[in-house]
Image 1 (cartoon, rainbow, N blue to C red):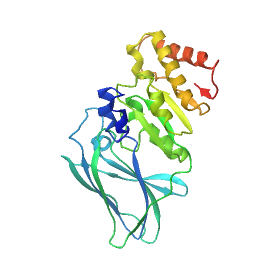
Image 2 (cartoon, rainbow, N blue to C red):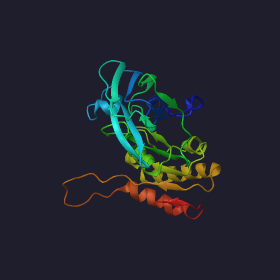
Image 3 (cartoon, rainbow, N blue to C red):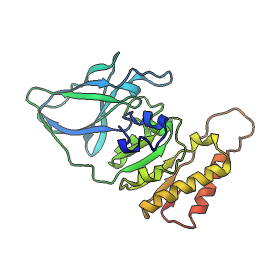
Image 4 (tube, rainbow, N blue to C red):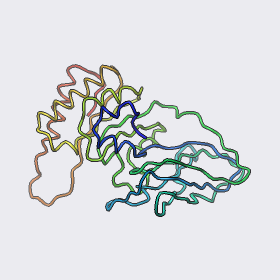
Length: 269
């Protein structure tokens, strides 16, 4: 799960429910003397989404470290119901020791996970990734909507590219730039913090978006005075209007950024 129990009464009920999804969470290990990796896993609930693949919602996603880069090695394909079993990859070289990273479902949680290997396989724990984590707070796009597989949310892609752990605090429809997320994020000693809530901020007036951004950054700065913070704009969707629509959310975020530059360093837009 993505939030500790102590925050259950702090966050909204919707955020708490979404935090039970295992988006961005992965299991790392090394294995030798196996020709395959298989998996059995049990989901928390039956879940399907009209605009996403079941592979991303409920499935697993295996990557292996090859020549210094994380390389896709196969999906754990879900079937139906809560209990699933899949052969993920059967092309391992028996003598090689391979470092693996297995991503858990994006829009569901799991209660149990078992991995299967050849009878004489050696499985080892690995040391933590060398860099401090990226801590990312945002919307459904960060959460993983609508990636094709569970390892293809953009936060996880960045993590593999920079060989860094990622804490995915994306909550579909609920990235509202809440001030208390400064405490939640600041509890983690990160290499960088991302605030990427703008796609969900259309419910707020321009000044309120500015105020909420300033309050969150100030709260985070009380715990982490020097760590870089990145404010991320929303995306431009394709439309067929002759004139572009003014985006007040971007103006509000830029105003917050310019105001905060007067009082803090290591802030990026």
